[in-house]
Length: 416
Ligand code: PMP
Image (cartoon, rainbow, N blue to C red):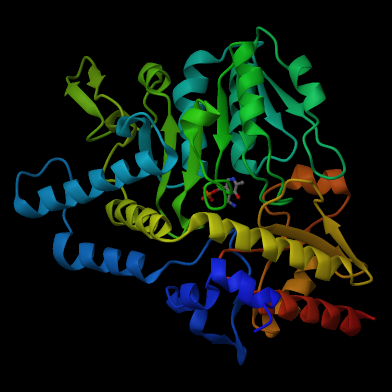
């Protein structure tokens, strides 16, 4: 048999098999088989995660930590077991460095309140990049406003790559934190975070990495990156909403103030004063999203059960193929042409608003996202109000990319 492109690809990655793990993908939308290309917003959930959540609700549902009874112990051990899985997944030194949060937004706000409000003062500086998601930008603006500190911005070029030559000049003795995304959700750029961390550390500045789009598509090793904080959203990596992790180096988490006050985060309480629990409990006030955290653990089990190298190679091939297909269509402009990209393809069509693109594609059963993607400064850089964004996961197929391209051609015909 002649080895076609398809058979070679299928040797490494059996996408048809993988799709069977994701029940949601089997449905039709507007009479057409669903093509789900909105993975950067939320990825779909495999059967074992759904089943793990159902098992918790059916057999283990109970509040954690405080109970001596059987169900509480089971729930606690599943919840803490999920923390161990996270620790191994990102290669943290210790499980207590992994704080469960609802997602990156909460993780960044935790650092803003716990680290920023304690350690940033008037005249100090925070560095963000020009391509940050609002959740890694607005909290820092709020902090700067409150403290009289200054926000400095690492710019990007017109391909959507950070201009690292300008980075060192932004750092000085007043710099208290550098905040940068691992992968841009609007442009797909993979940022050289290891290099950024090394340069910032030379000046003694800690670095927070927004890993919302990094963790689903890249192997994350926080010890290798040597970042000080790394934030993850579970719903972008095949887990339920309400799950996420803020990784922080233990010595930093220990010196930070708590974020939310309440039950479970204290050691002693009197009317005069309260003392706080050790990390990570200090940052997990109240009843956490137990089922979601256990679901994140199950999603990590799932990711460990597949060939992640092959999955990432497949995603890279989908991005390459989609870029080739869409850039070949007259009137389409790709936004975000960095050399190193992951799984995100932003584009605009001459004379057509991205929302209209999204609506017409939906009629074809294709789910993409249209808007500013919570990155308005990126839109301002490229002089567009919004973009259409297709984002890929390892369960997408080349046929789906072809359907995307055909639907984009249809949009152009409708508006011609
Ligand atoms: N950062 C990036 C790069 C993102 O893509 C997102 C989600 N769109 C976030 C942060 C915020 O994540 P969440 O809504 O899960 O808090």
